Image 1 (cartoon, rainbow, N blue to C red):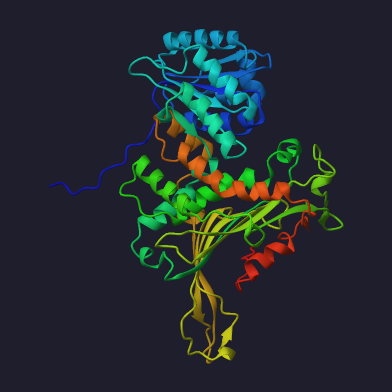
Image 2: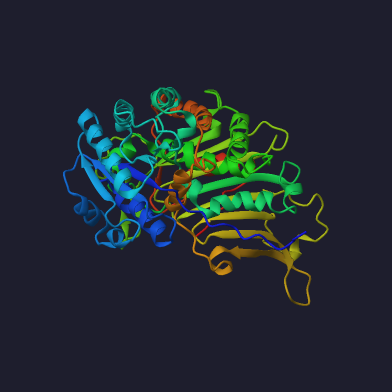
Length: 497
């Protein structure tokens, strides 16, 4: 029997046309077209590939590529030379989709794209329904035998559970669930996927990954930036909808779920749904003890004074939208019963950091005298998702010297220092997965429902609460209420700078 290691076959896309709705928008310019360019540069796209932009803005094919990339990198790629098209028109105009269908048929004949189409909705949420109905009206939701027609939808997927269900009804009226790829770019990050590798490729962590060893878990998504030019959008979103409902709960599900029977997409997604279902729903009576919101005010230094949220462009001067949200969650299952999970996210915090920190129980008996302990912290495993991607294991160690003194030390793993391989951008990985039809890192319909089920009661409670919204200075770690939230149990936030 040959025991030689098998080489992993590099993944590359099949013949296909990528159609981007909202092609003149910011997301297309900043993320999607650079992702296409990188896939082409790394030979992940075949010569039978085409790119079609759809938007209201009038422009031609070459102008489309030039104006969005600022140079001719995309046009210079062999896989895309002669394969870029642009269709202008209203999203609610049937003629737009008629001309799109003609363009796609022409590309099939000229480029050999085999009738495979990936439709990417990089539009405001209010355009989702007319685009989906327009595609169905032109028959573009169905592929001929042996080909595919798929739909990629950006967040937000609804504003709450009822609106998410309404959107699902529109989507499923034209596309079957296996055709639908709901994207959360966090899941495309190598460091998020490394949560799975750490848990399921290593036997040493499994025995301690439960309530017997873990005291509590903290998940932090902190941003140093304010809302910038997105004030109008953020007024209708807020931190709970923008970050917690998707990014935070997805990371939490990956970190806490049970091991799947296999790494097939449905096995993994089933376990994520089970975990989300096990989260105890907050009730109106205890929301004040479980959830905290805040809004940043002017702050910083004399040389770097940052505007408050209500001073930002597009923001209501009397806005009650939260730019900070923190929660304590409980998971009612065998593995995690009794372990509190603290999650928080905020804008204008002192550091940009996304991490998962598992703090372990302290020793049941510590025979070392207190005067020989130098600020000894509890053991912890910290998964750094961004920046400085890696893992830290925190533990107590003897300080060198003649005395027996113990203080906290750590062992660090760094992605950058360990691996020579280049880590692809999240959108690059997810675009390739969607072209390949791999739904593993995309969100299933029932995952969306379970996430809204967790945050909806809190959003509704805050909407009906007329008391002043707590504030925090820009460049601080959030409102004092957040410290009280975690401090009630004698714990404290892990604040990293």
